[in-house]
Length: 102
View 1: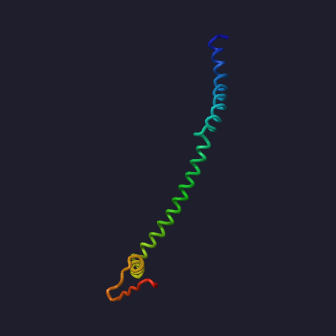
View 2 (view 1 turned 60 degrees about the vertical axis):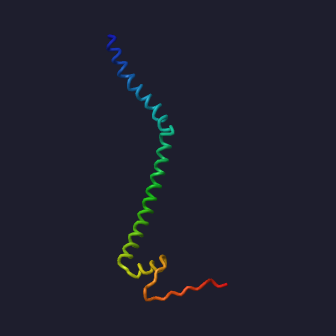
View 3 (view 1 turned 180 degrees about the vertical axis):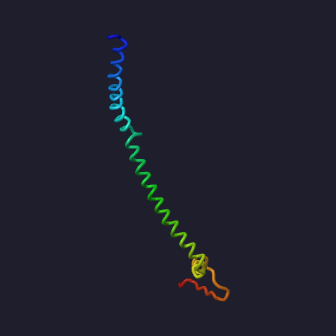
């Protein structure tokens, strides 16, 4: 057997075993590092939180759109807000202000 043939047989057997050994050692090390699986789980929890916040905000946006639509279509709703929040009255109304009881 020639030297080249011996090197070739060694390479055919040892190279795959070496690659598998390196992979068997390095994959668990990479997974257990702080940037590995634990980081992935933390990011997944953060992503779930963001999804739930987005769903809550989408519900809020839907409620606000319904309120805006109601204000556009219902003049009584606009009048109610003008009276309660802004303290406005109609021109034909008389306003009486009483002091606090002593």
